[in-house]
Length: 297
Image 1: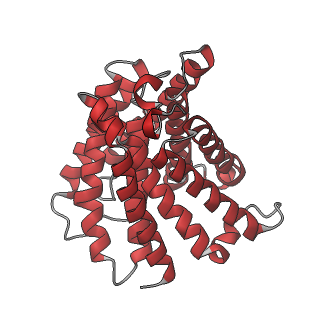
Image 2: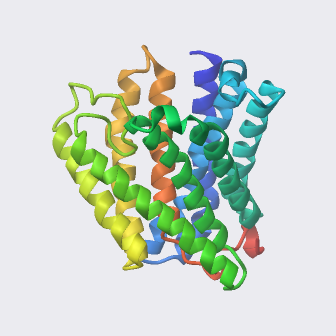
Image 3: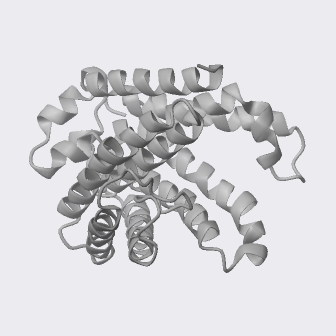
């Protein structure tokens, strides 16, 4: 096992165990759909920790991704890794979440503006380009909703931030859902270019179920209808996809390309966490804005 694989797996397991342990109070205080929504920050933190470990262990290989006009490429790889890790820790210990979530949203939007959009003229007809660009955008949208949900009281700014984030998440869910209908033979959740393995049963049926779920829930988020139920339902489907689809995929690739398997697993888990965050309500600090020992964020 390489340092990269060991670091990514270790960071993910540690974040999951710590996150679930420290979220017990919020989980117990919630009811109905709120219980799974209360775990959204945990499922967000785990892949953030995984990707942070990847930034630290293979920084030199990732440095060419940094825009050429920026100096100190290696520094920015470590900086992004540290930012992802800081956000993951904040979500796990549930402290300063308002700031960490807002800054995480800003980080993803900066990535879209500096890395994705400059390449748009060359890839405007490439569906994978749009999938990747919207992936970072939807991650930003989920973080925006989380930042709005932990404000100590309702405010115009918080409400607007939450609504904008929820619209972003809903729109991307619809886009991804339609892609599942058009390209059912490729991996589901975040519809990238990897074909579904031949050993996976009923790939088209899986793609259609996930696609219908994303479209229906995405529309509900956009129009504001049963938002919590829509986010919870779609989040559960995506979590099942992570466990039942990407878990076996990771195991099957562990001796050939474990980094790819880990990236697909963590990427879809981050999307699932993002969808769950979209169900949180602005100014919901009475339930989700308390830290360890009842200390407010």
